Image (cartoon, rainbow, N blue to C red; front, side, top):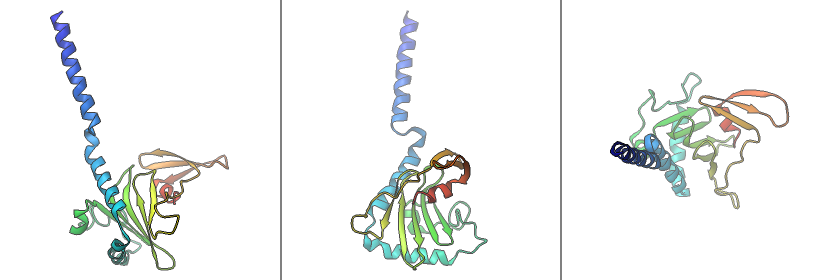
Length: 186
């Protein structure tokens, strides 16, 4: 009888510790904090913050060439992240032909500031808070500012590094990369 009570008490305490650990973020806590840091910074950006970001992006786009490994051009084995970006907790910078991504969290739940060079020479800033929520944060237009970017019409079935796109208008299943899937969202 005493053994059962002791096991029940130990089991209750162990269950409480596990529930507390999971409720406070558990093993994912550093990732959640990283995503929150990026989201908070992107939401705090003002029009006056954009010129330095545009200049930095122009400098980085000038480094692009076809042989450049775009993912992790800075960070992840590439060049070291500049100190000012490290202070913002940015862990990686991706450089594509007309786009620079400042990444706080990569993988399945991207948290990144995407800066696109537009055909007219202007720039567009898109805040990606995770795989499902993005918004154009600059340039702001009346009645459009801070509106979510349109979501893809297709059903996306996500797998760690790949996804499948099922078209609602056809009977086919198309294999696409996550980056391609993300681009269909805006």
